[in-house]
Length: 365
Image 1: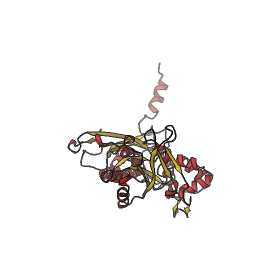
Image 2 (image 1 turned 30 degrees about the vertical axis):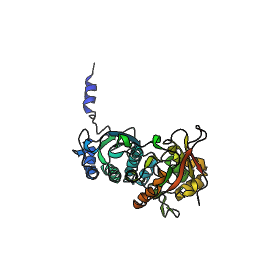
Image 3 (image 1 turned 180 degrees about the horizontal axis):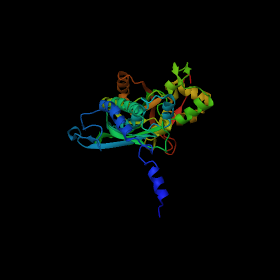
Image 4 (image 1 turned 90 degrees about the vertical axis):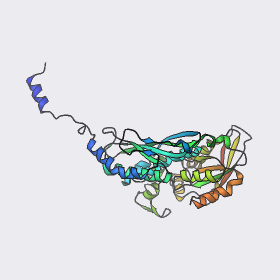
């Protein structure tokens, strides 16, 4: 039975609200208004409606494709976000997010159509959300896809006020008879490497451990080898290859692509090679950017560990017919993408042996 004293105390206690629990609907509404201009920049004519609905609508114009196959990919940015948070720079990791998603799509020859993002935050800070979406929008423009919407979720009590994490799902389309993959690869095919813009978005746990904890290098400190600060080097956005890969497909006989992310060059290339074939790659054909040498030296990281953790300067690989190598390289040159012959495909004497093998040494590494 409730006493008069209990009733008096109950009436004097504060009323619980969503805002008091840490979630601000008003801040969320403000964030949506601030991000709308950026979302509006990443459009395609197939998009119906705009940001703010319960679902994004995309009209698949079937007159463009005879037998369309949809491709989907989901990814995030990883611990590169820790660098963005430390420097309070939030308008570049969105580009990384798009790159991780769309460049997985294009591996099978799919044209990226649209992307939806998911931003989890401890507390909605409208300007920070707008900066994140600005980067995502810029990435979508670079990839030629639409930003079809997404979700910003506030998680008070689970994440700190300034913390956030990003993920996204992208959808692309490719003709059924044009799907690229391991079944197209043949002995004698040539492997073309495409230069990365730096660390991209993989290996940051090791990079942060070496450069920030072991070497105790300040993010704001100038590094002569980079010609800029360590933080600027680490936040360099991931190069987006989607349009470049589609241009290669249009001009040359491309068997498949390999997006070089976690696991490194050999492991990711092996994923697109059939049993019985192997890729022989020559390290002497390129020099990794100085950031990779710095990590290896300051952390005394063995080459095997470097090569299975980082892209080592190769962000995307194309496997092309030998007669189309010059044409493919000319396309990349015209699009200002560093490209070179990295190796070739041969028959494997042992079907169970590694499918991608690196040989030689990098010059000046």
